[in-house]
Length: 163
Image (cartoon, rainbow, N blue to C red):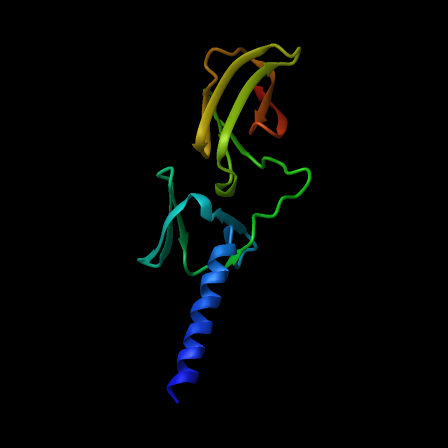
């Protein structure tokens, strides 16, 4: 009687070990349809506390997910890539600042350039492993400008107006 139980335990332990070995990312699917991927190669710790799932990465970045809207958490082989992959930044503009905010799953070495309509680079700012770049627009006069955003592989250009 002892051997079948030991064999089942051994098979269970081996199957858990195999699934962890091959997983490349944690997939978090929320009820709203938002799908987030967290690379396991940079993940140091995942904890559940105070109704949140907290993911700490090796670059000292913390992501918090509220448990209530999470529909599914699973381990996947890799983070799916769509071609072409948009950088998907969110742009927030005030009178003196332009904030470029990247989704949590799109952290990396980003660079933002502000260009005049004739293509002259007026301002450049980079950020490593950050999801926000803030640019001071005080020295720019009224007009139409281009905002070129790159992650080293992809380039996305948007326009904005200073009134």
